[in-house]
Length: 296
Image (cartoon, rainbow, N blue to C red; front, side, top):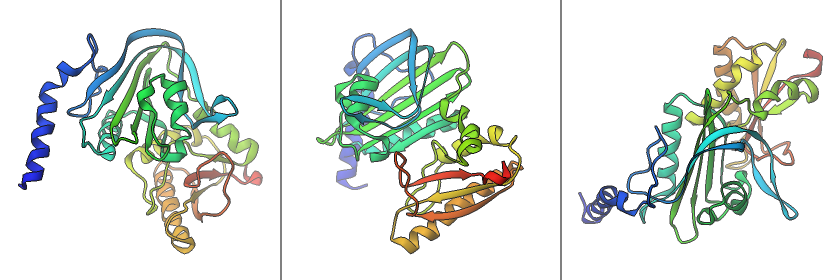
């Protein structure tokens, strides 16, 4: 073990041991969701029944002087809100993986996830969605994941500020009734009305691969689209590594989704769109379902 690695390990262990003394008074972790080791609570709202909690399931941006949320669900829920600061030297990617693995491991359905500029503006997330100024960060250094498990709602937002400090915000709520996200509820309608629908929560990696959160989001769609008659086409769009590489990698991405759907008994075929056919308001890297109108 090198001296530098030993020093980092000692700092991390000390932070884990002493984090309780650094938490805000009377603050506590949300039930069932562990903080990143060595982090401490810098903002906290205790569990409270919010009659109009906005569970964000889409990109957040600015439209003139107002904040625009592409998709969300408003509902009554008891919500606890916690913001953590990670120990200096913590990697942004490690904190993202920590929360993503926990949520997927709990069997929750991921209804939306985004990273970097695909999330929109960090200032809008920090000020308008969460109301925590410490969460303002470069748009290229943000991650968001929204998931649900029955009546339980989970939202995690992770940023790395310009000073390299990493913060994670967690909303954990219990809804009055099982929520139905607008993106999910409208997917079949979008397919029937306009012939295509962008799949929320599925973000292809630069190599065309799909992580566990994206695969979970695909699995969550099966119950909705299983009732559709006819053939579905899966088109993966990816802008990475030049046109030829993008086309090949996006084709592999589409086939991964198709294999997942066919396992569930859904007839589907895949195509790689590469960087072609950008859609206003949607990220360049995305997965779409397409249903030809003569098949509807």
